[in-house]
Structure formats: structure tokens, C-alpha cells
Image (cartoon, rainbow, N blue to C red; front, side):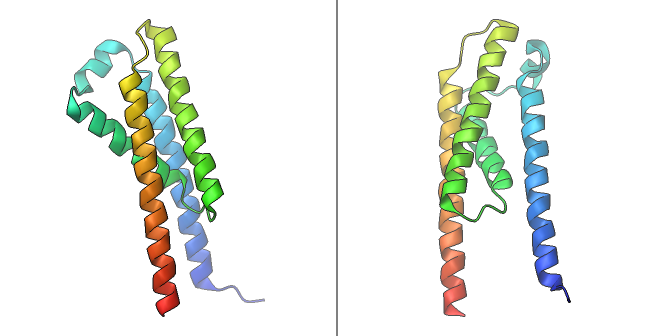
Amino acid sequence: MQRNPESFFRLSALRLGRITGIFFLALLAFVALLPGPVKGRIATSGLAHECSHIAVFSLAFLLTAAGSKRMRESAVLVFLLFAFRSILEFMQTQVYGIPIEYRDISANAAGLLVGFLSRTIWRANAAQDELEL
């Protein structure tokens, strides 16, 4: 039986995307739990802070969603990533004694939704392009 080289490289790219997403989440957890003085050096404030949360969580979704074929898988992933970040936010309150930042949680949710909608639109356009071929 002969393998199709295109499908092999496509599968490898999907795995690489998932692995990259997992490493990205680990890095995100590491940064979230850095001590205050260290995190203060790289912290942003105001609108830039919320925009960075939106961008980071949109990217986190897009990386970890690589390879999911169904809308349901993507929706479950949004929920899991939101839970992941909410747990990190709670851990920050326990470790550093700071209040929960609801604006961060909202910005994270917005980023996940931006990623979800971007991927949904991209997949719909890709499917339409395939039909036209």
C-alpha cells in the first residue's frame, strides 16, 4: 500500500499545530504565574492590556484548534480554554493575594470568540473554494 505524501505532510502539519498550541498554553501559564515584580516589567496597561489578552487568546485558540474538523470540537475547545484561563486567574488570586481581574477574563473570552469566528469563517471560505474547483 502506497502512502499519499500530501496527506502525510498535512497530518504532520496538523500535529505540529497542536503541539505548538500546547507549548503556547504552557508558556501562557508560566507567564501568568510569574511573581508580581517580574511580571510588572512586561505588563501592559489600559487598552493595550485588553488587546494583548484578546490577541493571545485568539492565537491560543487557533493553534490548539489545528486539526479539529467539527464545529462541536471547536466549541468544546473554546470552553476548555476559557476554563483553563479562569483557573489560572483563580490561581493568581491564591498565590499572590490579588483580586480576580474580571476585565482580563472578559478580554480572554473575547479573544477566544475572535479566534473561533475567524476559524469558522476561514473554514467556510476554504470549503467554498474547494467546491469551485
